[in-house]
Image (cartoon, rainbow, N blue to C red; front, side, top):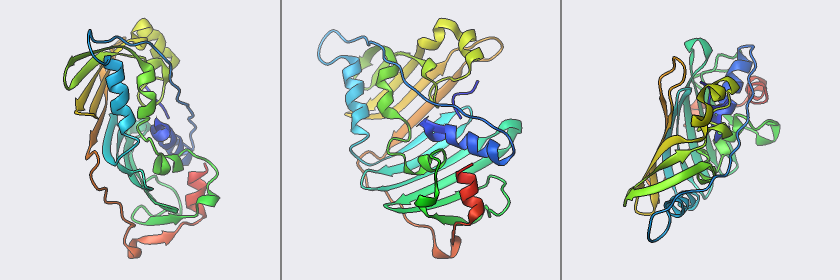
Length: 262
């Protein structure tokens, strides 16, 4: 199964897989999209979908940390709406090759680090970027994304929703929109059939905040069911995002821009 090529999520996994395969001489490209469904409701008070909508909207208004886990890798980071954010991607490419991508954004200052095997790039160094030299959004989008887990598209992909308790909402989710929390592979979608549009999900809340999301990809053929998860932490708490130590930073050379624009 392939959920995207890292950009949360939408563009997050999409960009990374694309960059890695390009650096290794391959090619991969996917996009993300959402689809709109109706939602079930509780018998009294706000509907479950309304509660989830409010919890998701809150993510754009305050600081938080996140960890998204999908079969292709793990994405972790911190977001401060004032313009401070950081991200780290630990991924596994075709053939089981592991790689990392890290990024820091402090206002107009961008820093990049990666273990993707590329001539002219030192995996131990941070590179300060000139944003004007980056023409493609794939990898840079991971660093500057204001909604790295594509949370604002989540509710539009919810079908039914039921609030089974003060902190739990369950229901169905449409995987066919692709992206990191979906499926792009046409063969997998065909194998799943109608189940692809009604994958089970569980959202856990803490007061007004969304603290975790689990989407279960049903089993198909010989492939066992898989989980796509996002955990949110530190809502409203100070986010510590700092520039790397000066001794570890270099001005980005042409090889870095070649990778970012690849």
